Every structure is written in structure tokens, then in C-alpha cells.
Amino acid sequence: MKYRYRINPSLLYLVGLLGIYSPVNANLMSDLTIEITGFGERRGQLCFSLFSSSQGFPDSKKDAIESECVKITNNPMRVTFNNLPSKTYAVAVFLDHNEDGKLNRNFMGIPTEKFGFSSNPVIKSGPPKFGESAILVVGRNMNIKIKLQSIL
Image (cartoon, one colour):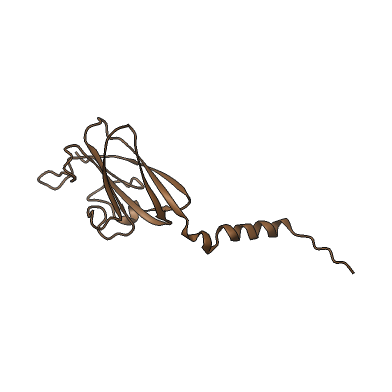
């Protein structure tokens, strides 16, 4: 006696989904591209810090997993962080007009250079918390936009 098996297309779809989300693909690395707008004139450099936890966010370059300054060449500017594990990150960026590598502040501690954060949180008093700027980076390529702002 011969048996005929009929494969349910829904079952094939489910098996395919399980393959996509299997632990084998859990190590998929992502590229995070950040587009910066709102800096006005093309003078100075943009300094970025990428954080994977709240420790040191947003000021401590030593606690950032990546930190770099790049000369302004275009408007808008784009910077890419490559080969990031899928997880939650936050980005802090500032416009460094005098290229000293620091976010300059006045005598009251208020930034005198433009700055921005991932998720573009509204700044009320002081810098945002990590959770207010957090983004979930998943997939091969992720793009976000950060608009620079100033207090003064």
C-alpha cells in the first residue's frame, strides 16, 4: 500500500519562519547609519558616541563602545557604525565648531554647541536618560536620523 503525503503550505511557512529566527541567525551583525541634520554651516566636526548601556551616557567617551569625530563634508552628514550585535543602543552627537573634541558649555553648564541624541528626545533640563534615547538595532542595515538642537 502506498501512502501519499500532502504538505500543508502553512506548515512550510512556519518552518521557514523558525529558520529565520533560529539561534543560528541570532548573531547577525547590523550596520547602523546615522543621518545628522540641523547643523547649519559646514564648519568644524561632528563627534559621535555609541553606547550599549546607560553607564556613562551621554558624556563619557571611555564608556562608549565606539566614539569618533568626523569632519563635516555634506549636509546632511551620514556616519555608519558597522558590525553591531543586535541589541539596544543610544547615540549622542555634538557639533564641535572649534574641533577641541569637547561639547563646550557656558559658565552655567549650558552647551554652547549644538547636540543631538538618537530618538530625538525633547530636552527639558539636562541630558536625556539612556532609555529616552534608546533604539533597538536589528537586521542587516538600520537607518536613523538625529536633528541637532541648541539650548541657546
